Length: 132
Image 1 (cartoon, rainbow, N blue to C red):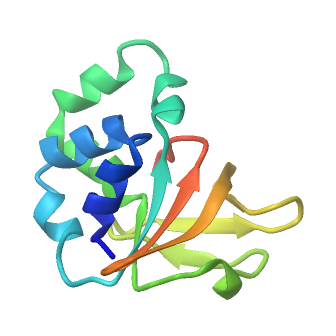
Image 2 (image 1 turned 180 degrees about the vertical axis):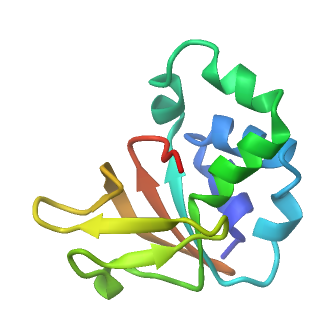
Image 3 (image 1 turned 60 degrees about the vertical axis):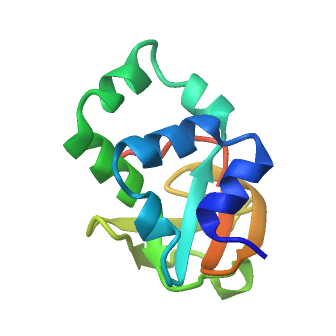
């Protein structure tokens, strides 16, 4: 297996996320022991943000770090662990809320691929960027 970052790099659909994690200095953390659960927006999710948003975030590391850590939950949380209405504290201190009424949604973003198991945690692919 591979770490969360190595898995995201090899997938090829998270280039913006990987670049943002690098810019925020979070690569070593997400390559660390963990475990972590990452709700990973695809490149398409970042592309759907208003024009200039990603560039602005890359120039504002504190805000970028806050947004990225809002996508990370300490521990390994698998799809089978989720219940409707469950709240999970993120690394940035805010909470994510899960809605299981029509598929799996986290703060309104749809989980499109669940349970990508890595050496140091789990990745769930989502279709939108989560904003704290």
